Length: 197
Image (cartoon, rainbow, N blue to C red; front, side, top):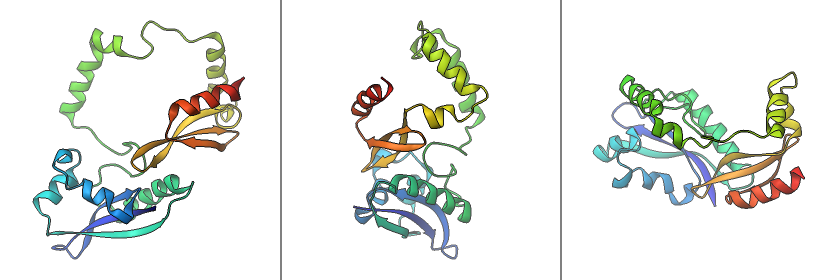
């Protein structure tokens, strides 16, 4: 499988790059096809732009390579680098995983604020009516005190580690190294419980 970074260029504006993205299966143009699916029309502004002006924007692969265990992290890092380099007008995050760099509108912020204040929303929170165990409190305390690397180095944990074939990839990290990664979170949780005992 081929992984890569792609872009869209504006043919009416000196082929300037207007969007940069990553694709876990760039050999089959998986993400390129996703941008044109009507069901994802409003998911990103670039989808709307491409579907309304399909001949104006040109798809191009910036970098591609064979998938290996480092591909998800490399793809995230390269996407961030290319977004910073070209500053494309349709990228609303800094790239990589998550929504870092995205700014909500004032109206969206107001709606979110109101929804979080409701009793219904508070009851939906995963910790509603629950309390941390003494052992968990001790570990959190150590993580927030003097040794800032406690969680990162000594304590095994599960992190999100990119994506593979369109699915979330998880990894167990222990002593700063990836021990095991998988798309199956349950398997990693079992392995993690064995590591902690």
